[in-house]
Length: 544
Image (cartoon, rainbow, N blue to C red; front, side, top):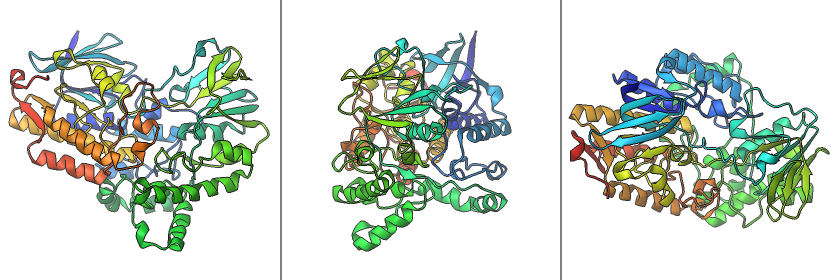
């Protein structure tokens, strides 16, 4: 049986839930399809030990409904995954969204029909949908790189990727545990399981700059205080550079060396991402400023580690890359874990992991580390990965995967030339996955999509697609903005360089959340300049 609807939403995370609510309010017949067994998106899948916010809880929220915001109370500044998942259930139930979502169902194929301008969508559970609009709310970091090493299936112990950590958890007590990767996720795992495991071997390829997290508990007084800031937050968050409450206030050249140091010390003591996202914007553009701030963070880390061997393995060196050009992790006593007798840091930069063997991890020089459990914190195919894993076919047989295998391009990160009536959130070339408080950005993107569909209905249009010229213009602007930063010169998942063969491009818009919002609004105000709307599919310009 085919279900005929107005809009199909892929994913029931932060973006998917709000998009479903908005389009339902608009009067559309909308349905959501979610691969997980419940709502939550990233907070459903990432339930590894230590998973938690590193955006402040009171800003990682929906801001379209004051009562919805104020009727939920957070227990601390940076809550853990179980509490975040409960919050997403609260939102879902409050808005009565569950009735319009099919769970444990994965979209496998979507084909655009040029004869009537609609999509045929298939799932792995046998449902077929006939929909006018297809909206991918699949997440920025939701395509885990699960098959990273030769021989993984030969391992006789347990092996898991953090992005697919089992709901029931793993028994790690007294076990020999290996953790591969020390990005933001690996750090959360390592600092959390250290007191439980028998021994832990951490395989380190790229040293990371880290910032200490200060995570005070919230009682009634603290909750009342942050809720009283509703008007301030709703007006401020959408306009800042990163969608956080703080913004860059200082100019490097206007400060003396003593003033710069005092500012860095004060912001470092805040125990948040503020040093990265609201100290000196020049760190993203000026190598000398980048190096000075990087050296400040290195000194803070070295003072805690003390051991020269650990410093060599765990602290980035001058010339590696600058602080802030990679994702910056927050941590709680993470570095001190390596001072424990039962924890070993193994550098795999010069001596990489060759394969997984039945007894554990084998390095290129033949060394085998015997393990009972391997936790892979090895990352994701960011930005484009989740949608590219679906067989999405647009005009003239072109596939989204095929197009992105050649060159990762979008228009505003919201649509793709050649794929009419396909909308995306958290996609490449929008503020996504980097330098962005994701609730701020995903709310703006879903609201733009809703406003666009409303405008189409007002005009009697049935199909919308970016023009080739519109897409070229956005890609050019995005690249000019990104290539002015040091991020573009660094190898990381920000540029897709963690996935072999992936076309290199800074995946996230780096011009600032407030600037992006203004540009999106300007395009809408100009009648969706750079997009072609049509009432009948044959009027839409075919792709080359």
